Length: 333
Image (cartoon, rainbow, N blue to C red):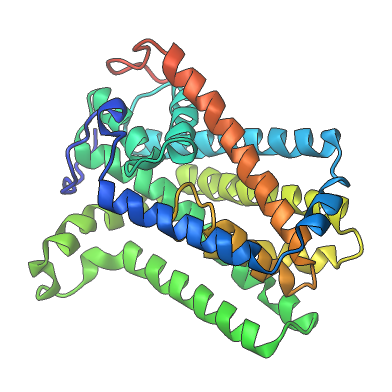
């Protein structure tokens, strides 16, 4: 166990006990999802959507589902490296099971807890403090967002090269800048002046800042965490490009690939149910900058969403079959 100061977090109850969530928040997220879906569908030609979807073969769909399944394994590996850095002794296969269970809570339950709280609960259940449990999950998220923001910055010149509209470049620049500032704040919250430490949020977030910097300073942890994060986002880019190649092969696939990190940043806003609505809006707007037809962009987004839901369904099966296999601390393998 590490000496991290504990984070003040809500009680980590079991996922089964928390799945009802907060009715008002769930109602708002449902309204956002439905509202955005209505907006996306408002001007679409449904006949064109159906005709375009016929270009998708079973092989393409299965390939995309397998890529997102592999992505879940790689994400579990990244989290396992972070767990080891925090002296949390857990088998790799255990982290894989928990990651699939987290996907179930993220994708298939209209819940306010999400997969992150479920993952933190399982670590806490294994005998570790709430602070450590939450830090491992949040650090995992932060490094994923860090590489996504870096990819968006790296690909920004590609958007300029292909003459993306100036107004869109401004929006993308603001998005990248906001994400970058948020990441900088997360890494350095504990270094703020004493007057800021009066706020409990800043004080308790200091443990997270120290943990994320400690991972970066440790080459044995930072190298695999960054490499695995890059691989995770590469799988998303490849999956979306494959789908676009199937439904809109005439578009500039290089420009589309460069837009994917920005689209994923847009879709990360946690205001809808399992990302539905936000992801579709971000995909239609973002891929529209590469002149991808709205119908094709929507089909890509729906296939991505259904692929993630399929992984969540597999996670639900794991959750039902585990029978308390994740118990007391287990030796590292």
